[in-house]
Image (cartoon, rainbow, N blue to C red; front, side):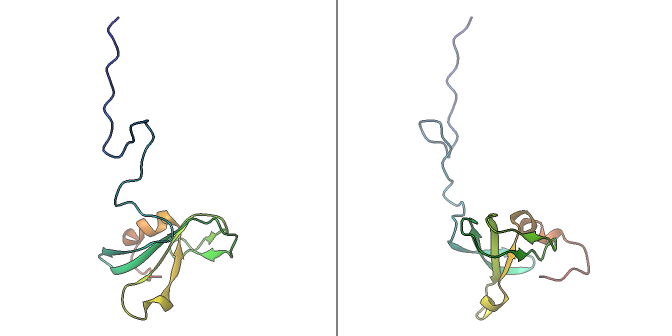
Length: 105
């Protein structure tokens, strides 16, 4: 039987084999600006660790239950904080693929 080959580590893998967070990965509670065909958005990942209130996702019209990790976004212009919305993470990623007649939020 031939000896086992050493497995190559991925670019974001630690020497002990555990996965590390990529440099550009999002961190909960830290704002970032995303550009998309629907404009520029300030986006914040929320861990859901706090037992807050339930929100309604504008992407699927379903409830985001307390404790569920999700995304908060608002337009990147001054005064856009008043239009802050809570989204399921998957709904936020697929918002550009929504059918015609669906509003921004």
